[in-house]
Amino acid sequence: MDLLRQLGGLLPGGRPPQLPLGQGEKDKPRRTLAQRLQYLRRPLRLRGNSSISVPLGVVILFPCIVVILILVLFVRHPSSPGRILMPAGAPPGIRKISEKYDKVFVTGCLEPDTSKPRANGAFVVLARNKELDGVIQSIKSIERHFNRWYHYPYVFLNDGDFDDTFKDTVKNYTSAPVEFGKVGPDMWGFPDWVDPKVAKEGIAKQGDAAVMYGGMESYHSMCRFYSGFFYKHELLQKYEWYWRLEPEIKYFCDITYDPFLKMIENNKTYGFTIAVKELRETVPNIFRYASAYKRLNNITSQGLWEMFVEPQPEKKPEVPEPGLPEEILRSDPGANKLPDIDPEAMEGEKYNMCHFWSNFEIARLDFFRSKAYEDFFQMMDHSGGFWMERWGDAPIHSLAAGALLGPRDIHYFRDFGYRHTTIQHCPANAPARQLPREPYLEKTTLDEKKRIEEDKYWDEYDTPKENGVGCRCRCDTDIVDVEGKEGSCLAEWVDVAGGWASP
Image 1 (cartoon, rainbow, N blue to C red):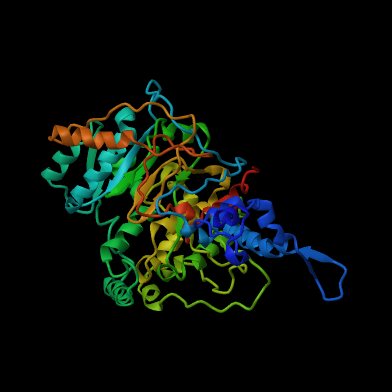
Image 2: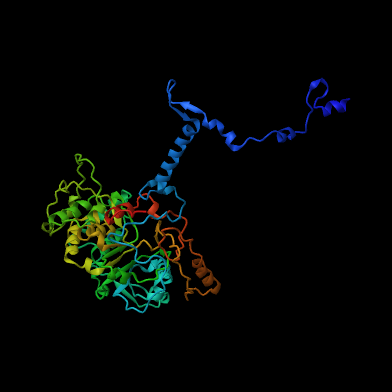
């Protein structure tokens, strides 16, 4: 009887039989995804008595979509500080820049063509004996990625004497010609129209105020030398072009063409790979004098000056900036050479602190040797700003270029991967434009295994990405690319270079 009741579907008392756990759910018809999300179609009235209704799903999803779009735009926009949220070292999603005035010389790799005559150019390195290790790092890097094919000469300069160890070691790291020269007191240190005691006091005050490198007398001398003297050195007189190298720099991409020849071919004057903002406390009055030079000489901008000027919204009353210390000007026996500078007469312009980072630059030396540049330098020099403030050669070169050149004269070496200290630009590799790499087993490392390992490291270059321009680049991954970093002046360059290219 019990068996019959179970077969009939009921237990005593009319209860349904107990099935094993889960068996009942399996026997029930399953709800489809559409059925499960059916509640999202439930209409919600915009107002209690309104005839207009909106599905619940739209109400839930719309704010989420808006937030996601805002985050994407914020993180990906090249001039946005949100770009610092990108993974460290990852090449930024490269947006193409207008080619109205400038374009990448070579996208990806070429087979190096060494059949053409070299340009009349050289690498210039300012260093001291104690910086030998950093110099070796720089030579090894530029030889591996470029000069093993092109063999451009090196000119090493020092405000002291290079010792034999330095000379012999450097020559061992390159097969290119090398010259060593000394920078004399006429190009280094305090000029005769400056009271050394006053200048030293000004430098000490900068050190006390923790101005970066402001308390180092040699740094002030170096900045002044690179601003107005390096191109006058006797060892550089025979050259028309220079490529600046610093100790402790790194290149990340193979440069399989001759940038000197490309600069000549495209009628360029000055080339950079990084543009960043200067520390405001180092150059509080530099723009006052640069602007005065431009105004007093009736110079009209050719379109580059605007890269270094803050955008002007509505006009507001200007707050006067502090004047230069008078002590340095009183110590100048030739003070009548410096015209009166009206601090309020800067045509409403204000320096935005942008400059081409000059520890890398490739430039035509006749630009620096021109009368216009020399007049600019003399005016800036006699202001006293190289001593009483910590003016660097980077803003000096940049503001001079802004006054005297146009965007068409400037080249952005976007395809160069370069690092100095904690600032790096390293492009993504160009898709379908990579070529097999020829091994480079430099001879200075005695350990054969170490030499092979070092060379193999560069065989494993980064994966090419859309809009990439580099050749066999392998970027450092411990810092963010400057193109995606707050403080970059890429956006300012793009503005004067023609804007972003249409997708």
